[in-house]
Image (cartoon, rainbow, N blue to C red; front, side):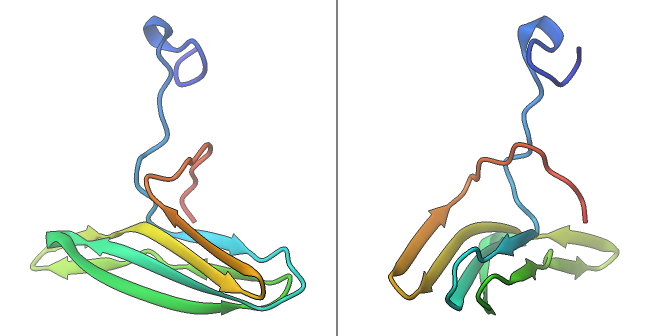
Length: 102
């Protein structure tokens, strides 16, 4: 069984360390503010702040930088969520168990 528990030589394949985009669901009855921090190529930083309505969903896009004929991608390094009685700060690497490309 390759890629699962007990994969080749007893070692399974790990999910990628980087998160390039995300779908975030607000399961509260209050609006929340989400601030995503991206690390872009050449160690530059970019921020994206979005409002997640109560019981709503938002998508954080993949950040792609074009240099000449190359497309380079940034990755999410931190998520900060604030709202009524909520203050959460998550820093990567994130525990991604089943990555998908949207």
